[in-house]
Length: 506
Length: 83
Image 1 (cartoon, helix red, strand yellow):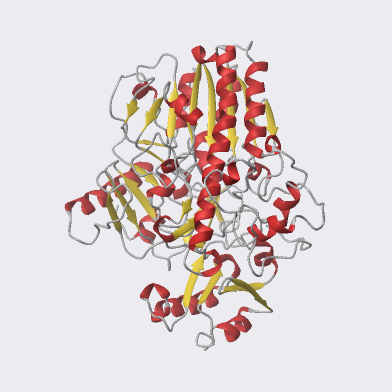
Image 2 (spheres, rainbow over the protein chains, first blue to last red):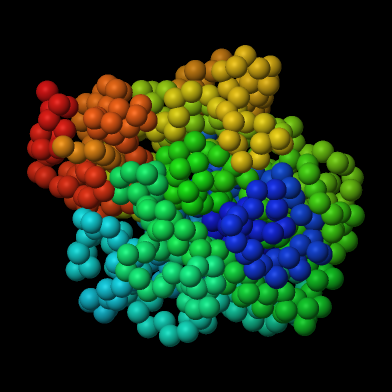
């Protein structure tokens, strides 16, 4: 069996017609995801685990539910990466990506184990072009705010980087998703003769900046997309104040550009489906399509992936799995599943025997050997609130911000600013602090970050948009969900410090 | 008078964080609909990493404000917190 694993960054599932329970104000064209869904198991209750980008990839590629122990960081020496295990078992492995975080400070170890990798340069802050010195003023105006660094400023995360990177783009095929999916289609054709392969396609689109060429820029708006008063790259935060404040007109435009980007991704994803058609690879290839998280675009008053309560906008993610032999190959699956489960699933279907760490393979579910999978799934950012769902309710548990959070890693990564150069952690101690390895790691503490002061409870089966917070009303469900959260922490042997900062008893 | 002050956790000292947190919890947070107050928002990252890495800063009413120290920033933009 081959495995083609496609992650589409920030793909909010409520923009997809195949998940109609919430919907958006546009009829977002996703013809290719729709046609893929017809031959795939469509998972209705799939949740992210560790957020944001790199923590999600450590879940997928190493089976580690990492956010209870550490934030955004590298593959650890005691991790068994999926591409390494696969190639040790004779599987050819390939990464196709424009996800530049793999190549930044503190994110190493994710691409190195593949037999080959294709890196499409230039997305977001990718440190690629240094010219033109004065990039396109209109693009800068749409992506910066008052007080943003001058384009000449050589500090980290200057948004002029993106404007420089795309300065030579002339048509749609120059953009990122087109390049990534075109390269993937070609890889599928070129490697048809191989017996077993694993190809991971990590598309940074539909991640911001929401800068798209025509026809997508005008597909869902009557605005002039070149109007400098409009915004294609909002800062994270509240839509009603601060640097992330957007007018209704600006927010409408951002949503339209996001929707346009979803359609652009979909059209080029279709090239991959065409390649699978042409090569006949559907018959011996499992194809997995998912997202690491969603993206707030005004939902609940927020934009981006800010320090906000972790509503389902962010964590209820799409998942489609085509399997040529699975009993549930073209069914809707309502069993509760979690991002980390993809690690064990892909190993199983590749025929690679390995420990799955925190992952529970979906293979028995796919093959009709059982109907249920999990009774709970937890999710969160390191050092913040901790959240749990049983598929019907979501329970968001706050943390005590005055209690620092403990970070565990063999690397002294930046716990709060992952893109910047690292600094020594002079207060770190070393020891065997992790329950899933005997390897010593560093442990040090730093600021915790709250998202809400009180517990929040939602009946997402009746209230999928989470408009009514049921917490604090003495409901039995709140106690039950809190107990479920404790069970999950106990099961994972979470650090004692987690119980303290969450004010939970073991 | 500032309406919204945002600060980045990585950029502030523990002492400054305490002052700002006290300001946020002193009935001045806009969440309380106190129209005359200042909304003080703590953020894990304000996506201003170049500035954050090199100098003291706040985002005041959506605009980056820098100074030699947080004490100077508080004095200029949150004088009530600069006690």
